[in-house]
Amino acid sequence: VQACLARIEATEPKVQALLHVDAEGALATAEAMDKIGPDTSKPLWGVPVIVKDVLTTKGLPTTCGSRMLENFVPPFDATAVAKLKDAGAIILAKANMDEFAMGSSTENSAYHPTRNPWDLGRVPGGSSGGSGACVAAGQAFAALGTDTGGSIRLPSSFCGGVGIKPTYGRVSRYGLVAYGSSLDQIGPMTRNVADAATVLQAISGHDPRDSTSMDLPVPDYLAAVDSADGLKGLRIGMPKEYWGQGLDQEVETLCKQAMDTAKSLGAELVPVSLPHTEYAIATYYIIAMAEASSNLARFDGVRYGFRDKQATSLLDMYKQSRTKGFGDEVQRRIITGTYVLSSGYYDAYYRKAAQVRRLIRQDFEQAYSQCDVICGPACPTVAFPLGDKTADPLQMYLMDIFTISLNLAGLPGLSLPVGLGKDSGMPVGLQILGPAWGEEKILSVARSLE
Ligand code: GLN
Image (cartoon, rainbow, N blue to C red):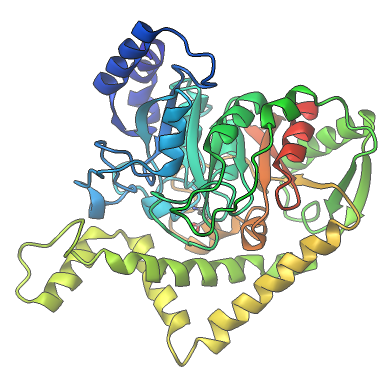
């Protein structure tokens, strides 16, 4: 804990990955644990972990990167956080994020942007950019992120870490402030595959408080990683839609090199197709915004969050609290989401998107009849300069092209660092996607390629 706090002190003025550091609490917990002595039954005993600020932490501020929740201190831990503590982890800090997890660069945080530790002029990715950057800066050994459309995998790839978005239902969403409830999953962001397996193990499993969490046994992920031994006989699907035009040269080169390594380790590369990829961005942004508009209706200035004290009537209080409490991107999404759900437009937008979502899911089912895992780049580019895409939301949304289909289909995916781009010197991430409940498989493939 002391070493991580020293790292925070040294790096935080430049990186700004965090919103709240609980130095006192973490040191006190560590001291109390020292007195008991190591408990080997707890796999994360004494390990400092940082948590994205969209997960509730008992007694610690939870802002979701928004002014709306500036003063919110929840009275309970999210299940994933409680499970981390049960496994012996020490919660050190809360990580910066795009407001309510809406964004791909962490520039939508209401507090400050986070910078990429590899190049302070560039973004760390988003929306879990604080989590990606704090791990890359050595501020903690692991962080929790959340992934609605790529928010674990994109910052992991931009910051050179390992990040897993688990199968929908693997990790309880209780205590995760909802963005797109049918898409959101919590997952680990770490420096290597074994650490990701250990943290995933700790947070997975059924939770009666989340009716979408699955009642399935949790496999031994670390054993899967430890026993990884080449890729003999593994069929890796290479979707033509992920390896075609629009890919930056340095991203393509490094991801292809990783595929050559896979081949030399015994894998067979199989061409597959995910034909509805071209509709994924439109489909995702309709569904995610629709769900967001509904989920964010609770922030009305009455129960929790910011309330405009100058308001003159109840309606004015709703209006002013939401106008002043939410940033531009959040308001854009609430308005768009409300529009696509409104009675005159529901069939044309929301229902249509739900239908296309099914086709996207079927694309994966079809592909997995020909292969065991699917590989492609996590993002078409490396981390981009701050301010590069803030003026044009569509440019920002396009960053998600390779990550969002997975959320629409509810499947697991992992981002693995495969080297530094020749021109930019920035990390490049390869995505390894698996069938439902295939976390063991993608972890062991990742370990073999690490
Ligand atoms: N960039 C996507 C969005 O803004 C994904 C965000 C996420 O996964 N939370 O919606």
